[in-house]
Image (cartoon, rainbow over the protein chains, first blue to last red):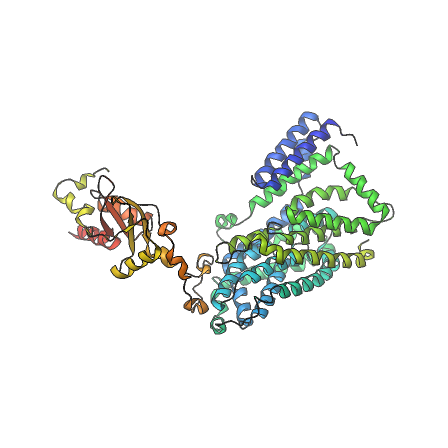
Length: 431
Length: 164
């Protein structure tokens, strides 16, 4: 394998940036921006990457969809909707630990199918701690299960998880494709993972609450700060979900739907725009843009060709083996590092694998499942995990790495085994 | 410590904190335990304990609120709105682990904020406001504790001046 000088320089920039991102010593968004500028600079010097090509490398469909959904969540956040849900679920569980775990996990998963799961966890976890404290339960099993199961729930839809948004945009997958190919598998994975979590936490969930009646006196509606506002945003999000399903029929892109819904909600609610924009996760959008520019550079320099031919040869050998190998390598990598850079790096590689007589969809699905499930393995594997661990550190029972490796890691491994079996069985449907 | 024009002359004395502060201050030595601090809060029915070294220099402030926070439920610091919670359920009967009472007060002690005895009322009121304190220790030129002024002492003094 011989590398040209531009290829060597661009590969070096990219590898250094990835190493810095994974070391977590400097904020990843700063590295992505500096890396993008370095890539364009070297592209201009060595003549392999123009400024226009760098702009074209940014996937505005991904950014638009993420931004639109972030706006909707930012409008929903201050209405107290998430607090309402958690309190309602707490009341419905009648203070029984097992029911509370199931309902909180279910609701968090369903909400994170449509809304960003990090925001969902950020907003539901503190109320979970509140409910657990007044019931006299340890919040640990609930927080860990919420993070893990919301990560799993997010894999089932196009908008549930940032890697899905990226993959859908690159592979031209529609919302319906995810409902057909991912959703059924994820239901099985969710049930198995929930079952394992329930079993792992069987001792913590054994004792009944000494104060079950405390939760009964709560009125979930009082948890709302703006019930009318919450209704409006939920209605708009519901409309957006319907349009996501009609994406192919109407020939519209998900970004258009998300930005359209966000604009409609903005017009309807007329919130304080500068306050609203403060709640947008700009660092994520910038991180994506920077990575897109970097990946565009190494692609133009021809760095990825070697990987394309390597995976192509594997696929020639056995598509199932190639798919499973990809799924597990991505899952294991995602458990120790951020799954977004992994996904963004693999996208142009998979995009360039052309297979005679078949399409490469099965590789995309392997990437979806690997990137989605891998993050559950460690405390730092996914942002939702980082969030619940961070919150738990403010309580008397912080979640440590040791706790997570006893609960999260087994769930991640079992869910990957289950999804591998389902993937293998469903392989013919992916072509 | 600068003296404002208002502090000069007879009227100025009226506006100096030393005129309004409590001169008998209950303070605590920096090597005390949390249990000793709690006993002082209970015995003297006070909300702030200035922390002093052997030479009576102010080295920190211990607030009643910070001691209470040890026993507060965790969600108080995590949930912005809990007005809907009419009863605290299991939390109501909760008591902190008695072992923490034997710890040194060090981790609960805040940075010392104080006002000089010749300072004006407004400066004292502003410091109370800025540092979210109910009582402000008053020190002399050497930084030794000479008094304490509560927000009520300062507020009432200011109001008396306003209507005088």
